[in-house]
Length: 530
Image (tube, rainbow, N blue to C red):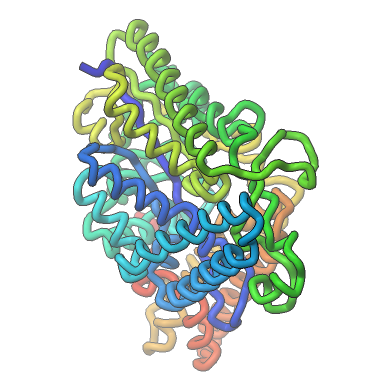
């Protein structure tokens, strides 16, 4: 009989990147890489567990922008072409390295992997949401939602309508794609502020996830710390991240993904192969990029990229099994100790970005597969659960008020409000005020109706926390700046055109085709709250 619970939570999210106006935009490959390296490998892990009779349980967010992109016919077609080029390159690498034993072995590994990716892609006709939904229907996955465009909610709280729109649009979008209301939400960047729980309750959300200090500094202080959820005064539950499990996986210094045996992310043949040879597989303008085929292992944490040993997936898989066993052992010790202290079953909540598993940490899906199997067969201290099941089995919890918090640098919003990105917020606030004003209009014709709805889409897209995050990290900054400005400019033009009664129908149609997220949105979601 298990004496505690382990709840893995994966947060699958990408910003809405879709450019039908261009034949090639590098940032669209964020989605293609995640499909190849994370989403389909996870689906294959889940299929294997079900096939072998392992009743696995896990919570997983699929954010509205990601769901929309995964079901977009244009992006599905472009991914199909992207995968075809990967398959072609892998076969070419096998032939090109026929006398280079270890490299040929690795090229054959990639050729097999891409072939398996193709099989899964075609099995679901390119609709990966259907693939994930089947695991929800069997109660193996508890799929939860997020803010409509991953907007950073604490920095919108002076405009409750903006927060409400992020939640309500996400709720309705989830119902449309999954055929039922979401039970939980990954609040964007785990960023909570006091009062948010009232809106979560009103929209119909049962629980959310915050960082550990959001509960540790709650009022009153939770008796069980982060090892049990609390109920807010509205009845919405808050689960908090466990920092011990987080460090074991996330930490670049002591975390598993930094092991020397694992694949080196930053050494890719797109940068190293002969230019004329690799040219058909890099950017159309001739610039090099990662192509997804990597032949080296980390080898050492601090050495140069030129001094790396060759990778071996066999030994990497063995290491993933070893690390899964270590993680399992540490959880049995942790949960056994906590159960003695708490005199009730503790729950260890372990949330991670889904893209860590496969994209950044190539062996991550193998690790998860081994962890589920080892937890099933090799221990009886904890039960793996998802958060909805836990709440059904444990309907009584302490009532507290969580503290304002986020994850990321310092844990109190600094990563999303600093000298690199503070300039965006006055513009977002002004745009929000304009959208609230527009929401009170009654359209005179179908064109004004369409323009009002498009204005709502543009504000939501401008609010994505990804743009502020990218500005802070210093990667792809021009793209993040361009996206923020373009959505704000479109909203402002729509605002002026609507007020003047002169809507440019051709331009509006073009913008609708580019920014086509939330096709059933109703701009009235921004009306002042009662």
